[in-house]
Image 1 (cartoon, one colour):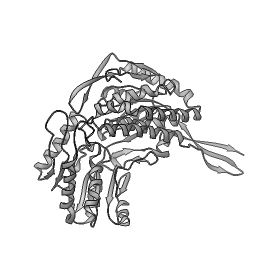
Image 2 (cartoon, rainbow, N blue to C red):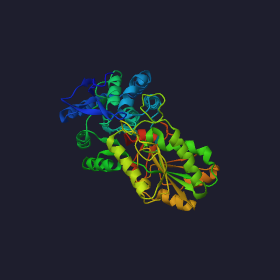
Image 3 (cartoon, rainbow, N blue to C red):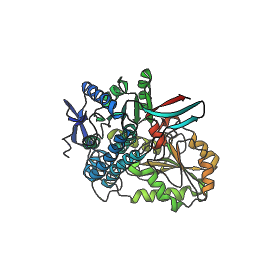
Image 4 (cartoon, one colour):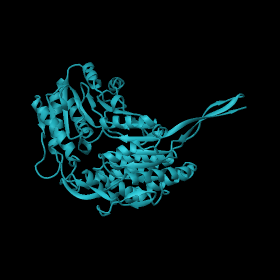
Length: 469
């Protein structure tokens, strides 16, 4: 697909826009394509198409399941074709882009096969009653730039499976791969069932305030999530908000540092740290702190950073200039606050938004790099003397997305994991995600969950059917 040959999908048709916007390759910082900038009138057309299509789409569950299976097969067949486009706009290595697209197919396949059975709550001489799930109607979905395609499937696949129709807006930093996926899926889905429009912040505001959707599913920053919730409130739209994280990893005393260092590193630096549930801060027992810092620094110094189209690259650039500047600001502040740079510490010389994988020691809570979500390739390692203090500090934040505990003794780790205030706790692992397990956050990290039967239920209304006897 020519990167300039992008169209939106509205009512099954490929639609251009009067205006377009730039899309930059983060490996060069240069504009390499332009994407359609959806007008308010085109958004109205997409919403109307979704509303029309939903009347029939909701009625035939078997058709929906077969269509989702066809979507999965289409994604599997075209993953290698779309991956270079995803790498060009997002920056991630080509292999990771291919894996994202294949994973998107896995999510569609999972929901195609997931049962949605009524729950019998009474069956006696008086009555038969059951709880059934009914679709909401039209879903407005807004996705971020770090995993634009697969995070779209976390919304689209369960929404369609439940009998809703969707209008989806990808991030303006990474619209192209999602637009291409929509073109392909329009060949296997009825017109209007999945509409994909592209644009900037104005489009997002129009979508959340639009009278047609009954549900908004948003993944992005806490600040924007609050605006989405406020926009949804006057119309009592249902919302699922998957927001930011400042995910702690607590390494317990006696843990084999050399054994866990690589897993910790990739739990923090996968996708160049641009993962909402990645490790954002590590708490290490003081006696093992220096050894762990050095082991992580060795990983950082030796990993290959480069253009995602280079097969030797393991980490790509930060996706956009705004995020790149934020990472640099937080690292500079950490150094000014007394932090010690064990590896990295600044941008990579040359074009693009490359930032050296950075390990910083000597910080504590109160430093911005510890307290804020960096969402990039920089990791503070914080020493602790008492595990009770480490748990309190891990929980002492507005965030509560995920966390992990690392120990030689799994039972000891489980006891600590039980006390972490977050939606997912991993033990001796991090970023182990799958379509069958719910994903969501405590506190400011979100509202509701995605994935699994719980995520599917989030796209439905609960109805009681009661029959007297």
